Length: 256
Image (tube, rainbow, N blue to C red; front, side):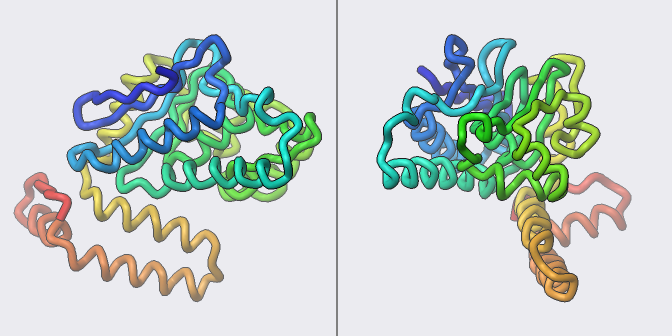
């Protein structure tokens, strides 16, 4: 199997298992990721998704270039739309997703990491959107997502030079949340627990509001924030959280 999906407690772990090709993304693998995401979404007791690559060399080295040569314009457009749709599904999951980047994260691999809610990286991780070197531009969401993390100027530089970004720089510019020196999966599970101990619906409301406000003028962003706050207040978990605070106990969120 080129995609493995398994449970680790209340988390799901999706692993790209094609180490002989540095976990490169063929169109078939992208479709397998799509199916795996549907599987995760159907498991109501999953509280987070971890995404990683098999082996120590690569998280994902990008698209399978052998599939890209001599395609019609329509086939190229359909391929880009497939990658965008699957990565958008990842970004919209009900639960947070965490990319555990181990090694190369180039092209589509970098875009896969960008589509996750959070990114943790091993010290040997190297990020890049090198499509410009092939006479191409990113097509799976890199152009849309990278500026939101690192700013327009830095994104222009990374995309238009095609240069590599080492793990320490990636952390410094906000491309990753942190560089991990210990076991990546264990750290990912610990990181997930620091988030998923809270109400999943409230986490989802916060995440979507942040995404929407990032694209909005201040006045509209404040309206979005007000609506999100009001929506969260209606949930049972909101009452439980406030009651637990007043009673000086830990809240027992039920995701309601």
